[in-house]
Image 1 (cartoon, each protein chain N blue to C red):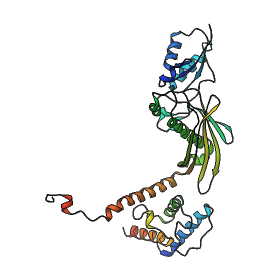
Image 2 (image 1 turned 180 degrees about the vertical axis):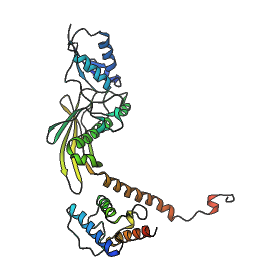
Image 3 (image 1 turned 90 degrees about the vertical axis):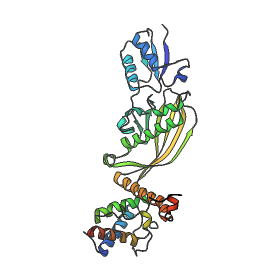
Length: 259
Length: 91
């Protein structure tokens, strides 16, 4: 039987899955479970699959009967604790690994429950805002897992993000893709600052670059800075009201008698 | 608790210079008339200053009585602490 080669994508990409050479996760698993696949099936895992679907595909690939072989393996989602504490379903990247002192990589790994994917249900490509969120998750993960000391990790927060610049060179489709974080600057005074570029690559081609800087502060300082700014903003908002002439009874109760 | 103006002044001056040193600014011999923003204090350094002064003096005037725009000079900052400490001693 001839070998079949397919990219499996999440059910949320029906438009893209209409292309020859693709299969949705549900369709693939139905075929594998029913034993309908008799010949060798070579798979690449694209975007938008649920963790359970990834795990089930891995189980079939690991069974060793040669029915399903996953090219590049089945990616593992990043730890949710880091990327979205309290929001487990929405990690957009896989496990981050250090490739060099200043370079880190992860698979792009969109989960079909990602709210942002709703934006592009009628399109074949992954939306720009989804990539921006994947970039944000990447810089949070790299900072917390690799750039901060143990003590800083316990006491500090990313307090500001500045200078975000994005360049979208090519569409990203729900196919395998990688995310690369490259550290471009690091300052420590008066607070830790990291400059970086997060780039997305698909089919060995650079598709998207997002550069930014973040500031990392002790949480107590960040909270105090925010509290001072909040009180000042409230004060400024109330100032015109305080300066206004008191309302007359006629203003307050036009045509009537004040209570 | 430190309550005399001289005590509070000394603590405020020392803390201002400690933070300026950490931020790699030159130390200042204060007259009191210096504008806080002119000597290098950003919102970040001001937040640090207030945390450190609260630890040293036991009060934070910016929690209730003052907002940042009320305070322009070093002497006004010292007065804010003095009045807050006096009010808390009376209250």
